[in-house]
View 1: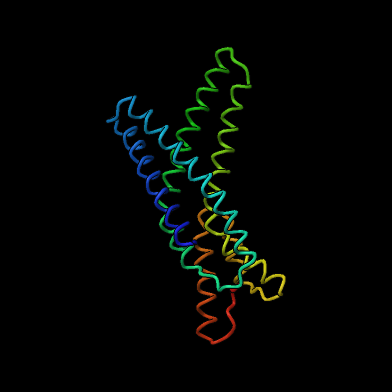
View 2 (view 1 turned 90 degrees about the vertical axis):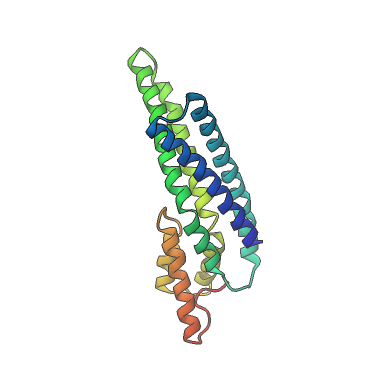
Length: 200
């Protein structure tokens, strides 16, 4: 289940990254027609929304499964997924900067030429949706690591390094580092022949 979920998410991220990168390069080099750029923009937005919805529902499923699971935590799957999705998050950031920059410019021009301040609200709403959607996609790959740690807290078995690693899971760019830290904790505990330091 986890493998299929992560594989599909990674494949979707590759598709979105390719679409976004093609559009960004085309805008930079001016090699795409207006129609092609518009088509790529719509395609990227659709891919982003599909990823958002998929990550939301699979994240909820992972949450439910993690709460009732007593299996060892397989951090490596989440770590690999996060690493493979780095190109998407880079392209996604650049795409939303371009999109929000365009909407912000339109709002500014509208206000300057006699419009009203309300035209700036869509830009703010779109920005909030972009950040929220991206965060949902990111956090969905961490749910199966976060829930077991919360269990460890209630059992009073949480280590300080584990706390740091888990906090990183909630932060953009540092979530992959957090997964790596938790993986090292698990490996060190296994090497010392002790009870797993990060186990559901």
